[in-house]
Image 1 (cartoon, rainbow, N blue to C red):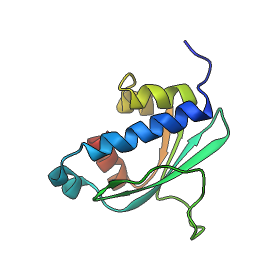
Image 2: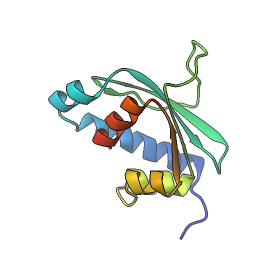
Image 3: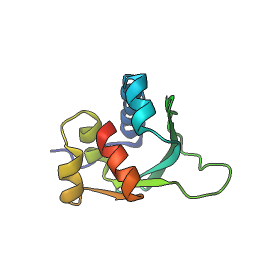
Length: 118
C-alpha cells in the first residue's frame, strides 16, 4: 500500500470526480443536489481544494478559497491515498466514514444527499 499520493494525483482524482458527477442523470441531480460549496482537506498533504456543487454538476476544484470568504457548506477531510481510492471506487464512502478514514462536516440533509450521489 502507498504511503501517500501527490498533490497532482489528488487534483487528478478530483477532476475525475467532477467528470463522474457529469454522468449523473439530470433527473437524479435535480432530486438530490442543492447548491453547496465544498472543501476537501487532504490532511497528509496540508492542502485544501474548493469546489461548488449545484444542480448542473460539480465545478472543477481549485486551491483558491471562495472569494466571499465564507467557509464551505460541506467540508471533507481525507488522506491522499483514501481520496484516490474513494474516487476510483475502491473505498466505500459509508465504510470510510464509519472507520474514520473520511470526516465530513455537513448538515444531516447534506450527508444524506452526498451518500446518494457518491
